[in-house]
Structures are given as C-alpha cells and as structure tokens.
Image (cartoon, rainbow, N blue to C red; front, side, top):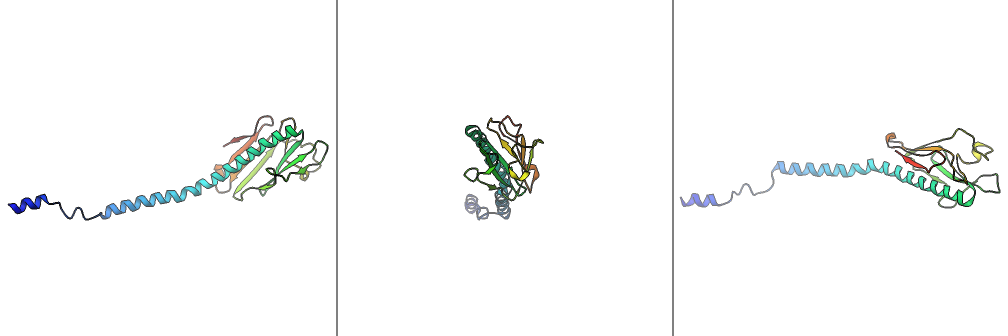
Length: 177
C-alpha cells in the first residue's frame, strides 16, 4: 500500500520529457507563414511605394513651378517622352524660344523603368511653339493657369495600381486613384 501511494504522488515522467511531433509541426507552420508574409509583402508594396513616391514628387514640382511662373512673370512648361524622361522648360518674358531648365529641382529626370506614363493634354495647340519638338506639352502660365492635362502613372506589372495627376487648368493638380 505504501508503494502505490508514493507512485501516485510522483509526477508522470513521460509527460514532461519535451515537445510532441504535432507541437513542433505547428510551430514550424507558424514560422513558415510569418516568413512568407514578411518576404512577400515588400514585393507587392514596393511597386505601390514607387508609384506613390513618383506621383508625390511630380505633384510637388507642379505646385512649385506654378508658383514660380506667377512670381517670375514667365511661362514654364513640362514634357515627358515615351521612355519616362521628363524635363522642365522656361519661356522668359523677353523671348519667344523655350529653354530647358537644368537647375534643381527642375532638372531633367527619368522615371523608374517599371512604370508607364500616359500624358493627355487639351486638344488646342500650345502658344509659342514652332514645332512639336520645340517645347513643352503642358504650359504653366504667369497668370496661374495651366494647360489642362491628365498624367497617368501606371506600374507595368499591375495596371490596377495606377494613379492619375489631373487638373482642369484652373485648380491645383490633384491625385486621383
């Protein structure tokens, strides 16, 4: 009788010897899921981050050049080519010829290769242009008006994540998703 009481009060040695196979598999599964989410999230978010950075950059530059045109009493312009390279132009008050701006922050800039760009402007011809290659596609006038335009910034991999910069010519350039 004494021996059964002492065995009953002693803890079972088989239950406290470590983890079961099922517990280990559950922990490995949880670690795998967390690693998968961690490694895949930068890939999907990176494209959207690039689009957002470029759109924010352009929106800021559009706002600055619009103010600059008003303050300098000169027309400024913006053009973008099919490769995603854009440049800024100035038409000084005493001149009839557009000049490319090379000073920061309006120096020529090439967008990341994984983005596509589509610029739509008003149907009317722009003033002061002798040929299509002689100046900008969008003009920021000294009276604070702008050539109405829509600029689409679209990732090549996922067209659904595109963003549009738009103005009617009187209001500020807005971001539309």
